Amino acid sequence: MGFRSLFNSGKGSSETDRKGVRWIPLERKEQLKGITGRSDEVLQVIFKNSLTCGVSGMVRRSFETNLSIPEGKADLHMLHIQHNRELSDEVSRAFEIRHESPQLLLIKNGKVVHHASHGQISFVDLTEWV
Image (tube, rainbow, N blue to C red):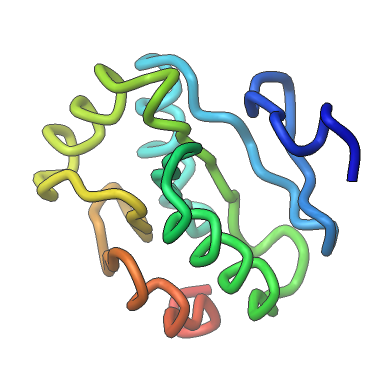
């Protein structure tokens, strides 16, 4: 692992973990309307991640390792709260879910159908909602 991967800011068009999970960076408020609209077609997942929290990193790796859904059945969005705290607050307001970090929101038909934080994220099985 080099410096670049160790200190990756998460910015860019997509972010891929070691297992090949493709995250869509959530960086703009305008994206929330698209996420809400697309949730009528496919499950939308928002992972609020803290780049400075060891628990957040461990939970993310555990979630990615245990992720087993067919491609195209969910859009995975990564929100790094250090880069986008205002957006993180807007996600909380829009979906009426109190902010936590790490936090996972599952959105279907414009509503949060499930959310989890901290260690509970590791036990979330997305196949229940796809």
